[in-house]
Length: 219
Image (cartoon, rainbow, N blue to C red; front, side):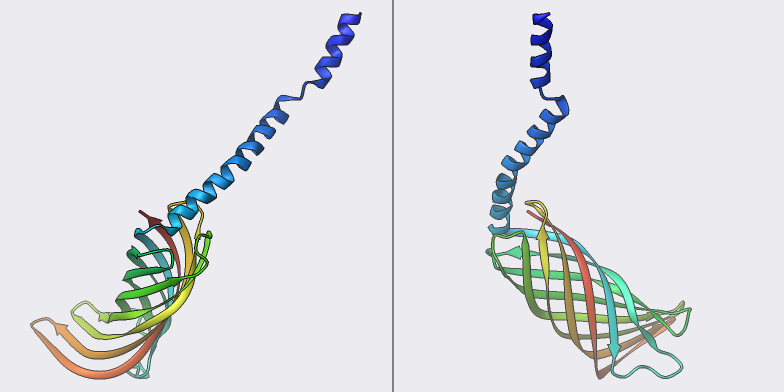
């Protein structure tokens, strides 16, 4: 009788397994969080290269559209690859290559704008997972209209500026979003068709604004 009561008393004091598991997980999270934060801080502050992919939505504006019967629609979408190097915790160089596709008033014809841009980045709040930044740079741009037998290319250069943020959800990966505005001066148009090609110097202005979401890996 006394032994049975003693066993019941000690059995009531023994915590259930799920409680022990919960306590262990909580302890591991408490211990791991500062370690992960310190590791992420070290990664964010060190020098090194990075590479990533970005999905963009773009708005294209031409000061002089070809005509009322044919026009390029403002809104489009595309993808960019970007790579660069972090010199320290605040300064970085970013090279972006990509393009976007825009519909036109002619359903048989699409407009494609490609670009290569070089940015200088300045990042704020070093050592934190949330890193806002501003950027500015230069770029080269190509606007292409292509049909079955005719290819029209308009090329030029310009300046680009904007800002955004990166959020480091692990020591080597970040998710980010950014805004970029491009001021473009188109300088040359070329026409290629079956059997001949022709080029012409022009002086036309335009702009492109893009919103992007990026996944980036840091070496």
